[in-house]
Amino acid sequence: MFVTDFRTGIEETYGMRIREIRRVKDVFRIRTPLGTYCLKGYDVQVEEVFYIARVFACLDERGFTRSPKVYPTTTLSPVMIHQGSVYMLTNWVHGRQPDFGSAADLRKGLRALARFHAAAEGFPAGEAPASRIRYFDLEKDVSDYKDLLGYYEKKIALDNLIERASSC
Image 1 (cartoon, rainbow, N blue to C red):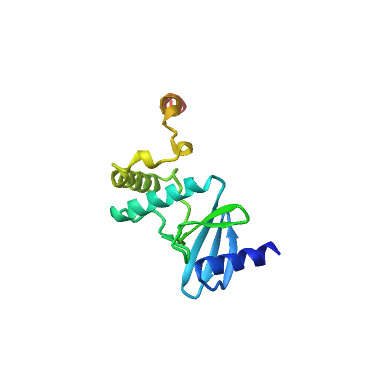
Image 2: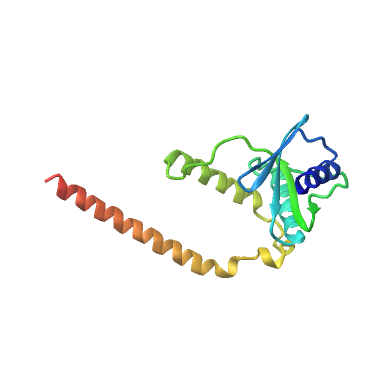
C-alpha cells in the first residue's frame, strides 16, 4: 500500500507520470517519459532541506555545474513531504562512484571540491539552520586529520626502509 500511495504522492506533487520507481542505495531513481530523476529522502527538519536547496540554487547561479539541480513541486516548493518524511527531487547523475585510491579520481575530486568552495564563497552563513553549523568541532577535526596524515607519513617511511632492507 505504501508504494502505491508513495508513487501517487510523487506523481501528484510533481505533476509527472512515473514509468518506474526503484530504490538505488539511499535514493529512488524515478523514470518518466520526460527523463530520469533522483528522489532523496532526508532525515532532518524541513528547514534544513530548504537550506540545502538554496545552497544548490546559489551554486548553480554561480556557474558550479556539479551540484544537483532541484526540481520544484507543482506549488514551486523545493521539497515534498510524504507521511512526515521530507524529500527533494533532483536530476539523476549517470556515472560511477569515484575511487579516491586512484590518483586520477582523487585529483578530479579535489578540483571539483576547490570549484565548489570558490562558488560557495560569500554564501550568507546567517541563513544556515543551527543544525547545519558544524564548525565548532573544526579545530578537533583538523587535529585528527593531522594525526592521520602523520601516521601515513611514518608508514611510508617504514615501507621505504623495509623495501630497501629486502633488496639487500
